[in-house]
Length: 163
Image 1 (tube, rainbow, N blue to C red):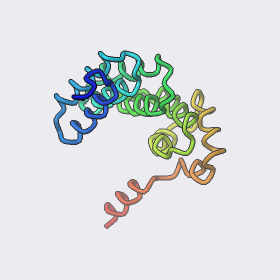
Image 2 (tube, rainbow, N blue to C red):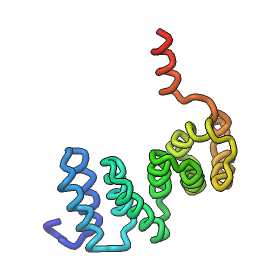
Image 3 (cartoon, helix red, strand yellow):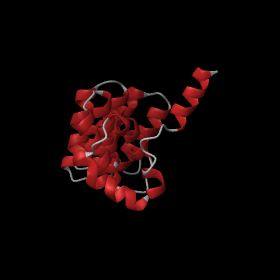
Image 4 (cartoon, rainbow, N blue to C red):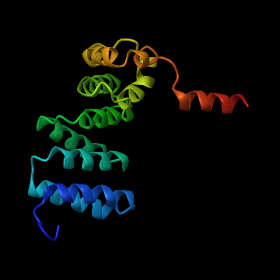
């Protein structure tokens, strides 16, 4: 950043490093600087939104994910992280819809499938998220048919409880 102090992507990248080092305040400052330099940089909104989501600030997280989506992001993480936020606040249908959108954007990515698993076992109907799951079924049929089965973490927890 010494070479180009206006390189907005560098600030967003450094924010990731700051977060991994546990320096949340410095990460937030870097995300803010990245957005200040380029208000259309969706990746910075997604990163900052994820930081807010993980620090239990759902209103700020939702605003950032919505802004990234309003910028017509091609990054499925905006929908995936917003789905996780909706899931954590009990808004299950909205979460299913967003998991479906993330899957439609990137059918080979398993994370949205895993995130959707607990919701789908409770809510059999996919309503708004159905299109994304259909595209996912075409890309990963071996995985989608198992969505209603417990994932590896759930199986391990069950084994531990049984002794």
